[in-house]
Length: 161
Image (tube, one colour):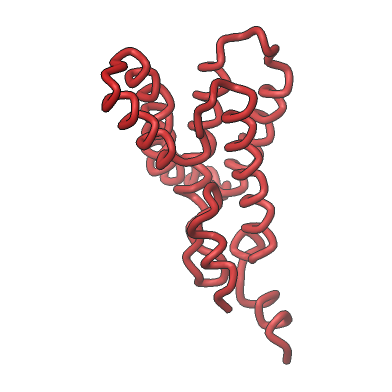
């Protein structure tokens, strides 16, 4: 039996590497989207925001530094909610990871209809929130720890078989 056939039998669909590859692409797109088109803030992960916050603080730009607390707070909120919700939906016999992908799809569709003239924070908060939930929910593919919203870890982990 081949490794591929073993993976087909052993893992749930949401745990397979192809799902993680797709989620990685979504995470990368959302990071580029918010940085390039919605206020130069990285919303798919927080390392860049911590760096930008630190730079603003170092330059004495207090108000600019405070701006980076918005995406960080949204990310924290998404992380906390993604710990609480799976336990709540379990009683309805619904898989949390499946629900989250559906929720993400709805949010991305909403993002597509938000005009460029709208305050950037609307898009940023939405993206931070869903990226945090995605990162916290999808933690491993086929028993390999992976991140789906930032590249440093997933590029390294993709090579592990």
